[in-house]
Amino acid sequence: MSNRTTVSAFESEFRRYRRLSEGAVEQLTWDQLRQSLDPETNSIAVIMKHVGGNLRSRWTDALTTDGEKPWRNRDTEFVDDFADRVALMATWNAGWDVVESQLASFTDDNLAKSLTIRGEPHTLALALSRSVSHTAYHAGQIVQISRVLASRAGVDWKTLTVARGRSAAFNTQMGYDANAQPR
Image (cartoon, rainbow, N blue to C red):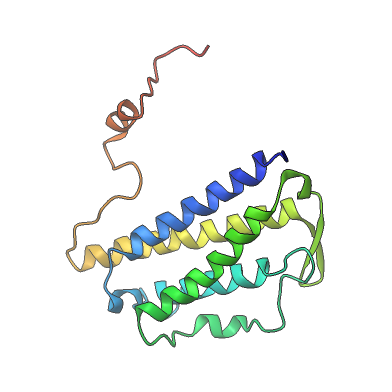
């Protein structure tokens, strides 16, 4: 059986950022997903389109083709041309389907393998690290913008992580005791 300890950790982190993003998006209307906080920022829909496009490009045939695919047009990822929420989610899910499929095929033995992104050599480990960091960056944007838009609309926000002022209760629920001595 091949070792997947590190690859599983990447899978877990990708899942976490997908879950946070989708939990935020579910709390907004279609119009809110398309709203920018100001003229110089991207809407959530545009950020999701970019993340989906990036993941799809980077992880399609990752070990055999450059991560910047000839069919990718990054500039159009920053144009909101969605007909509806279904189309947005299809673009988002297309990227996630590719990265999740590729991750499932990797083992820790693959982490030293070489791949390229825009002609620059990377180990698989570096490419995964960069990709999960890029995804986390945009997930944070999605969550923060969602909270602002929900607040402006007077919508009660459903906290996606530990609620403010509830750390001790969360720790107790998780069976964690900060005063316990390490073994």
